[in-house]
Length: 394
Image 1 (tube, rainbow, N blue to C red):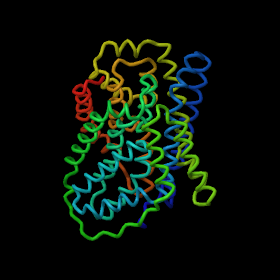
Image 2: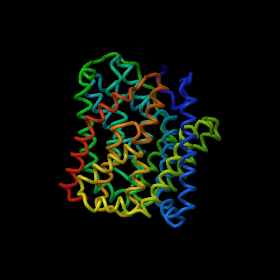
Image 3: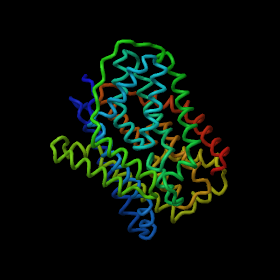
Image 4: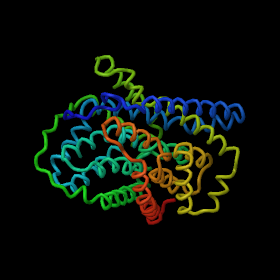
C-alpha cells in the first residue's frame, strides 16, 4: 500500500459482493420512487410539505461528499492520518487524536464524508503501526454517528428537524455543543476501554507522510464551513461549491464523473429521499407520532427516536417523527443521531463504512460493531440528554 489510502471506489479488485451491493442500492431507489409516487398521489399537499422539508438535507450532503472527494484527492485526510500516526506513537494518544479528527470532519463535512474518507486512512494508520485495526476502524463509525450533533450539516437528520427551528449553524451549535461533546467523549471512552489492549502498543519507526496539496480542496472545505455556520439554509450554496470544485477536477482530467457519482451513491440517496418523503407524508396525515411525543419527556423522546432510527433508518425516521413540530427537538436529534450506532439499519453511514472498509482490504464485523454500539449508545444518549437538561434545552 502506498503512503496515501485509495479513495473510495478506486481500490483494485472489487470484492465479490459488489454486484449485490449495487443491486440493493437500485432496489432501494425503486422503493423510494414507489414511496414518493404513492405519497404524491394519495396526499399531494402533505407530500409537497414533506418534500420541502426533506430536500435541503440531501442536497447539502451531496455537496459535502463532493467537497470531501476533492479534499481526499488533495491528500488532506491521508496527511492527517499519517501525521497522527507519526506524532502519536503511543496508541492511546493516537486514539485521542483520531477522536478529535473524526469529530472535526464529522462536524464540518458531515458524518457520511467522515466514514467515506477517513475509514481507509485510519485502517492504514493502524497497519503502519503494526497494531490492531479495531479501535480506529470501529471507532470511525461510532464516533461519526455520535459526533454528528455539532452543526446542522453534520447529519441529514439535523436539517430535517431544523426545518421547524429556523436556526443558523451558529445558533444550532450554541444549543447542541454540550450534548454533542458529551456524546463524543462517552463513545470514545467506551471504545477506548473495550479496545485498550490494542491501544497499548508503542511504535517508533513509521514511514514518512506525504505532503498534502493545499489548494482547491482546502479552499472548498473552508468555504463550506463558513456557509454552513452562517446561513440558515446552506444546501444550495454548499452543493454549488461541491459541483464547482469537482467540475474543475473533471475538466483538468484529475477526476472522472463516474467516480464522483459512485462517491455520491445516487441510488441510495434517491431511495432514502423517497422513503423519507413517504414517511413525512404519513406523519402529516396521521397524528400517532405527535400524540406519542405529547406523552413523553426529553428522555422518552430520545429513546423513541433511537428505536425508530434502527427500525426505519434515521433519515426516514426523522421525516416521520419531525413531520410536525416536536416538543423536544434536540432530544429527538440525540436519539436519531446516536441511536443508529446500535445496528447497521440505523444510518447511511453504516453502509458507507462497510463498503469502504472492505475496499481498504479489511473485513469489518457487523456483530462486533453492534456489540460496541450496544455498550456505547445507552451511556452516550444519557450523557447527551443530561447535557441538554443541564443547559436548559429540549
